[in-house]
Image 1 (tube, rainbow, N blue to C red):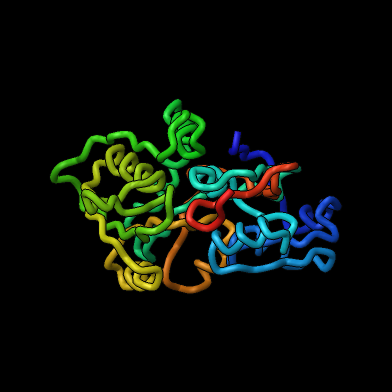
Image 2 (image 1 turned 30 degrees about the vertical axis):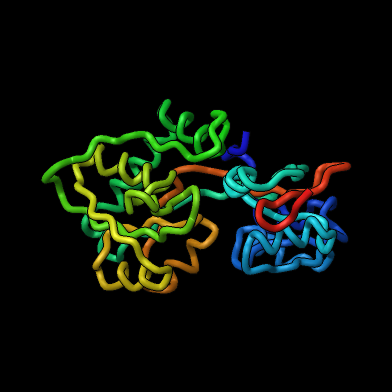
Length: 265
C-alpha cells in the first residue's frame, strides 16, 4: 500500500540510504524530497517547476529517479505508464491543514486535531486511503457524500483549486472536491460547522488566514513545512490527518515511459 505512518525518517536517516549515492534525482522545487535530499553531497538533485518536466527528464534519461510521494504518484498513473516505486521510503509525510492565528484561541484548532486523531482510528480512514491511492480500481478520486450542517457554526475555508487529488474545483459544478476537502467536510459535520468554501490563490491563502478572513485553508501542505509556516506569522498548522510514503520512482525495466499529451509510444 502507499501509506505507512511508521517509516518516518529524519534528514539524518535519509543521509544513510547508500543506494541513492551517485544518482541524479529529480524533484519539484519545495517538495519533501527536495527538503530531504538537499544536504546530500553524493546526490545530484535536479529541481523542476512542474511534474511533467520531471517525468520527461526521467523518460529521456536526464535523471535516474524522481523523489515523489505516493499520493502524487498514484494520481499521476492515470496518465503515465512505465514507472514504478522502488526501494525503501525516504520518509512518510503527514498531510495537514492551515489554520488562522485565531483558530487556537477559538478552539477550532484543538477540535481539528482531535478529529484528525479520531479519524485515523476509524474504519472510514481505511476507505479514505484506498480511494486516495486509487486502490479501489477507480481512475478518479471518488468523494463520499458527507451530510451538510445547516445553520451551524460558521467555518470559513479557503482552498487552492489545483492540487488534485487533495483539493480541486469541479469544472462542471464549480464546487471544491478532493481528499482534503472531504476531510474538512467530515470535520465540519462532526463538530456542527457550516462551511463557506472560497477558492484562493496560493498568496491569497496566507493573506486570508493572516487577516482572519478564513478559519482554515485546504491545499497540499504537510508537516515537513510546519516550522516555516508557523515562523511566517501568517498561519498555524494542524496535526496530520493522513500519511503517505515518499519514495524513489524509476522507469520499469525494458519499458518506455508514456505521458499523455507529451510522449507517444
